[in-house]
Image (tube, rainbow, N blue to C red):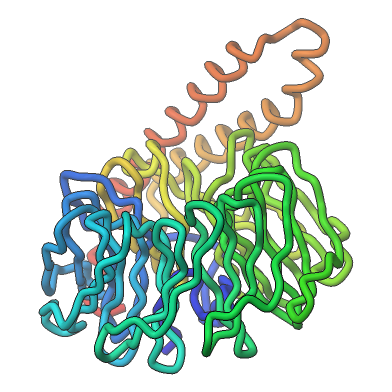
Length: 420
């Protein structure tokens, strides 16, 4: 089994899972609440855990989406939980870090910070590292007692990563901070040109992190020295994913980038035509990213292998995760959690389904052509930015409608087994 038990998968924030996935994304189940979900889910113990804007933490069965328990924690939880050793750790807007029993949802302990807790916890060696206000906290994972706290220069949205006895985090003070994991003493800090919303990823003794100054940075993990940086067209809120010496990250300039992780050379860049603020998940030879769709790209070429979208995701979604041969993604404003799985044994395709799939491919091609021709058409005065946005949204709406019809057509002639 290959769980995804915390934000970005592991303490190093690699965003990588080695489970088996196919190109096609097939909907297995959907769970919906009335309020929004700005928390990305995590998967552990054959359960799915996530926060919500209705003050509850939810625990669902991973194979069916059925509710096991929900626990009210005071205020909304945008922080993604971490699930380790039968405990769920999560921050919320009521200023508390909460620890719950993963089987029943009972509150085991809570720790009060200074303000809201948007940062996601990382749990290593019975310690919880999490940010709130201007502090990075280290808590005893069993008892919830403070071990140390480190004061940053400004507010902290970034979530900490831990590797090689060091903890790394960004802050609105423009700095990337590196601390001793045991004592919280500063080892080094590196100054970027603006606030840092992105969370760091650690691999091969390097720290990778984006900044609101439009740059992606690669730093020496021991010294903080700059190894390379790349300037995108806009802010980098996305957090990196790393696999096979490749680094994947989105930017608000509309591109999902793939870099050589050692040199910073671009391997490929795919233009989605709108900001990419979510973070990618990598699975062997595929990359998944959430925007108005869940898109699956070839990790080597950046070409889209498949996409899925419906009315849930059309208003925006959070970072997808991959666990136990399934993909999970929550929608930001529509309050949906979707689970996709590998569909290996296809039944004979109906004429209606074949026609819908052809329409989807035609729509995708029109969308790609529009994105490619945008700059040239605007430069020649044949299209305005407003007209481009109108045409783009028209095609997106059309594709969303087609996807809904595809799902309904597939559901007519098949019954998904409870345990796939």
